[in-house]
Image 1 (cartoon, rainbow, N blue to C red):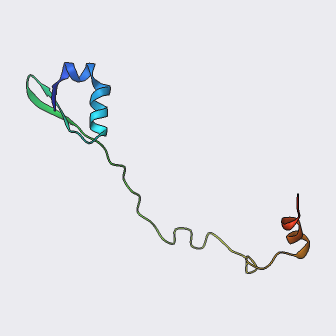
Image 2: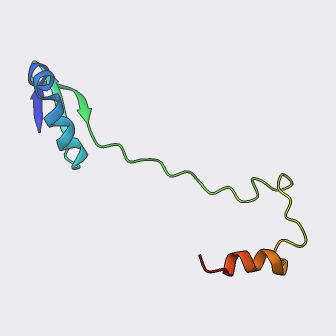
Image 3: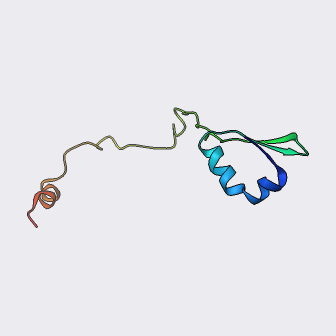
Length: 78
């Protein structure tokens, strides 16, 4: 769709909705295209493995069973 600048100023919300749906809107001055309104796709951040290497420490007993008195608290009826 091509619109002139005046129409683009008065219909901006509508034109943005069109762009969000994937439609391309061309804005023209005196009938000559000067700008294109299109949808922006969000950039995906690349996964960076090992980013926290050396910054986190997990204790050796991390997954050991809880002491019986603490385990009993989790299993108690409320």
